[in-house]
Length: 208
Ligand code: AP5
Ligand code: MG
Image: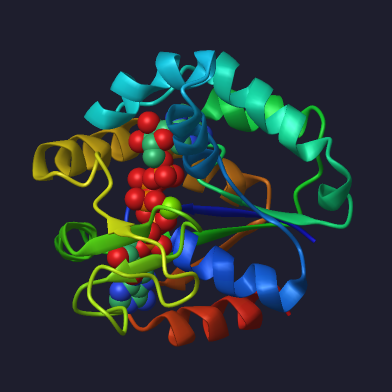
């Protein structure tokens, strides 16, 4: 199944993509994770996107589409995938439609207040990328990943100014995709304000 997870920053796309990817045995493809890996490596792409990401702006469509095309050409994506955080503009959605058929788009709905609470308490593992929250999903040992023992850190774009800018950018550039995919009859909606288990059950139910 070829799926897209659409939703505001902090809506829980990454958390749920990890859960569903295990269950359906299809890869989670997060453009944010791919860009962060490039920044960590210090590659040319990483140098180009670092400042943009820190401010919470969008990386240019051409770079993003290129990255996704390359990732989707890998063998593990042949049996389906979850696109987490892509597309984020109408131009990206049009480009994707030229070479992929999407089965369903899950829209995660959530309030701005909850987004701010979730992102202000998020911690991410530097080694394996596992996602925690200091109150909602704390690790067993503070600052340490349960899964791999790696160090937990605060993402550079999880500062309040950057969070507010990401919400603004989401509303201007990404929210129009809800109508875009509704018009194409592939949109499925979930209320992502409850627990991850509740969101998972809703996703399974809308995909049936
Ligand atoms: P990206 O990494 O995609 O960030 P984002 O869209 O802002 O989304 P987040 O990763 O912040 O949130 P999420 O929905 O995954 O939530 P999570 O599961 O972590 O993109 C980063 C940047 O890269 C962009 O700003 C842009 O610069 C660039 N970029 C990426 N894709 C691009 C594209 N297509 N085009 C252009 N530029 C692009 O959860 C958040 C927190 O809440 C965690 O702490 C988690 O533990 C907690 N939580 C999750 N679910 C629940 C729940 N149900 N109950 C309680 N707590 C929960
Ligand atoms: Mg994410």
